[in-house]
Structure formats: C-alpha cells, structure tokens
Image (cartoon, rainbow, N blue to C red; front, side, top):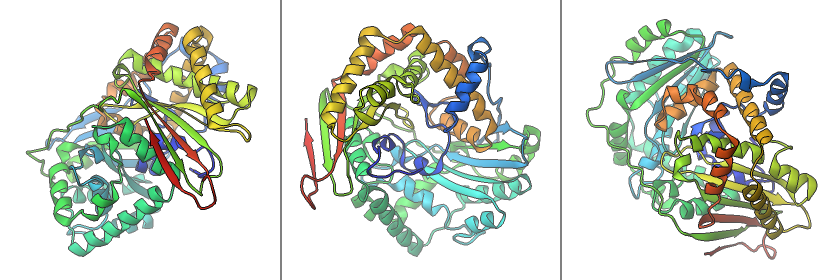
Length: 492
C-alpha cells in the first residue's frame, strides 16, 4: 500500500501501525466491528447490486464458522473454504499495546518481534526459514488490543505450523544479546516508520490529544525513550503474564473441517499449560477535551497541504448498538467512491479537493474516532477545504440523507460482504479482530442482517450525534514556510 508523503496521507493514521502493513482485509468498520469488505471490489459489488436487490434476500450468515474450546482454555475457530488446498493458520493473543505498562510503551510490539527468536527446539530465525522453504507466507502484527501471528501454507503443512506455533506459545527462550540487538531494530523501525514520515508524526500528536487519558493516546510502536529502556526482564515478565492458551484464540480458515482440525489442535495445543493468573484488561475512556484542538506540522518532505478533522465517536456507536451500523451506512454514503457525497461535491463539482473522504477508526475497544480528510487542489487552501467540508456537513444535518442513498449504501455493503467469502485469509482476520475486541462469532455472522435493518431515520440521527464540535482535533500537514524550515504549532 503506497503512502507518498505528498499524496493524501492523512487517512493512514486511522489504522493501527502493524495491521496497516500486514492486513489486507477488513479496512472498513461498523463501530469497531470489522466490516466484511474486500478492498478493490467496490465496482464489482456495485455490479452485483444492480443485478438484483440484495436487500430482498439478506443472508442470515456469511462464513458459517464452527468453534470449540480445548481443556486448557484455547478457543479454536474453523472457517471452511475448500476452493483451494490451502489454509491460513492464525494465533491471536488478547494483549496489545494498550496493555503496555506505564513507562514501557512498545513492549507488546517488542515481544512480537522477539517471538521469532527461538525456543529450546528451534534456533533464532529458523521459524521463518522453515515456512519460506515450504513456499508459505507468514507475518505478525500488533495492535492496541491484540498481537497476532499467521501462516498461509498448503494444507499438508498445517500440522507443522501448529507444532511450531504451540512451541513458542510458552516456550520462548531469549538471550540478553538477542534482546539488546532486537531493541535496536525496534528503535530503527520507529525512526523509519514514524519519525521520518510527517503524516505519522502528525497522527501521533493528534492521537495524544484526542485520546488523552487512555492507552490509545500512546503509539503502538512506543515512545523512543521507553523503547530505549526496555529490558529482558520487562519482556520475560510480559510474556509470562499474557501468553497462554487461555488468553489466545486459534483460527484456521481454508481447506479444513472441524472434524479434521480438532485432533490436530488437541495433539499440538492441548498439552500447553494454561495460566492461572491472566490480568484484567483495563481500558479507561479518554478524558473529553471539551475543546477544539489544531495541530499544524510543516516539513520539507511535504509538497502540498493535507487536512484531517477527527471527532471522538459517540459511545453508542462503539459496540453493537443499532447506531454503530447506522454510522457505517452514513460513512458509506459520505465517502464510498466517486459518487459519494463528499467526492461528488468537493472534487467533481466545486473542484476544491484532489481527494476527500470520511472514515471510521478501528482497533480500539473503549473508544474510536470519525474523521473527515482531504487535500486541496492547487490554488485552494486548507481553509477553503475546511469551509467546504463544513458546508457539506451542514447540508447533511439540515437536509439529512435520502431513502435512496441509504438503500444504495446498504446494497454496496452487503455485496462486499458476499465477496469476502472468497478469501482464505480474510475471514480468519475478520474473526480474529472481532474476538480480540470482545465481539462474538454471532456478531460477525449477524452483520448483514444488522446492516439491512438500518433506516434513514437512524442514519440521520447518528449524523447529528457524530459531528460534535466540542470534541474535535484538526491536523494539517504543510510544506515549510521557507527553505529548510520545519516547525510544529499547537493551538487550542
């Protein structure tokens, strides 16, 4: 996914650091429930909708997952897709950067890296070498709420994947030299991924203000000073505290059935001892700032302005309340493709913006955000763009959305849900994210019915709730005022 600094980079801050790099599905959200969508299929979804109304035949389920739990507490989820003899094997741990101890930010992400550094059975780096030799793919990612590891391989290699992953669930071994070396890797990753990219630095500053008082104000990768102070005892204590079968979910999707998977799970994961003391996950709500904040970042890497305005999402849009699904429909109306309200008004008709949109944040249990973003065309300013966005929001609040807009948005969303079934790894990611964020399998399967139940009145009501000018942070990326100038301005 290319993210040129000079392009419309701001929306990237809406997504968690590692999932942006590793996950290709579930980029849209319903509250924070991953929507069943596949990037790049919007046109096909529209074609499918034209062929006949999906609203007349809304599916009761999408993936038909099956689940069981081992005696040691490990939940196992199976999503069968026999289109190719391939499986995706994922282990999700219910621990993320929001669980990092104070002063030790970046610890969950640091441990993710160290999980590839060997056990008593395999050498550092051997895990990845084995998968590569089999022609498989693998990676890992850390978010606020979880850490996940996955492999996609031919079906016959699944037992080996399970053996390797079960081994490092509680069998990780670390030497001081490895910890010290990998800490340097993390520090360099922060310099390359955050500090050298203006839009990432702006995102950190906005999150620190918007989510003040909650763990979501702290970047997943951690603050530089905290990373420098992470030691071996920090990692080992964190590992023993959180990594256990009764704090994890195993998800296997692809050419596998429950009857085939159960004996394998019992053989490889069943002997792993559970933990008797998994900590409670604490997720305080952000402290509402009850003010507007504006952050302007100027940097020589930026050659044209970009703009984003973020609102804290109302509490009734965070979980599975009807308002959460109404917000997803609203976002689709405002920002889905070239016929969306924002694009048609600001890009096509008024020619104020090169790109523009509305997005929902994801990956957080107790808070989220809704953002408006864009970059002005040559000859227009961010003030012009901001004023035009204000006018579109006023038009939305004064006149509301129409029945036809709501029906079309629901058709698009339902069509995307149907296409999501074709993926092998996508469903594993969708269910993993959902379970880590305290949703259920039933919540995912009920998604089409809940979207279909959204009414025009619900969408208009949630629009009035969302755009609260008392809790908003605005971020602006600008070229330097003068050659070699670089500054950040904060005003409230």
